[in-house]
Amino acid sequence: MSQGQGFGFGLGKMKELTEAFKKAQQVQEGAKRLQEELEQMEIEGESGGGLVKVVLSGNQEPLRVTISPDVLGEGADVLSDLVTAAMKDAYNKSTATMREKMEELTGGLNLPGL
Image (tube, rainbow, N blue to C red; front, side, top):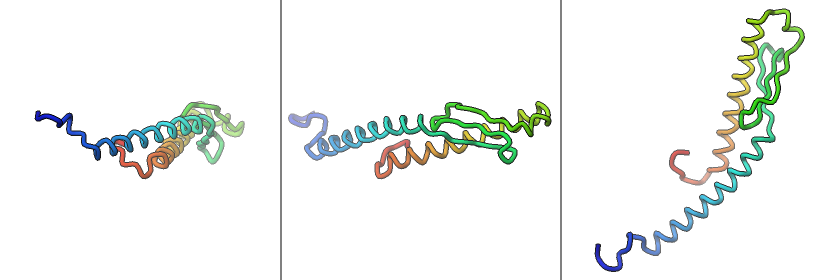
């Protein structure tokens, strides 16, 4: 390595690095706000035309299940299928919401892997 070369960081590279750190910090702050926002959200999935409803938080924590009395006479197997379908519906909606929010957060940033 010749004298004065360092690690190949010229002033231009330092400026790029500083900008990258600023963007990373903005994303980190945005991610913290997003996490808080997702915790407050309620995302509802349903099945059987609303006979069974499952509510998850935005970060997929189960909050509650509502089962209509009309479906109780259908038997355990039917009820199990309806609860599972409502859970999948809520999960898919929450995953889509999370993805949208992350795209908003990282929009304009060329971050690899996101």
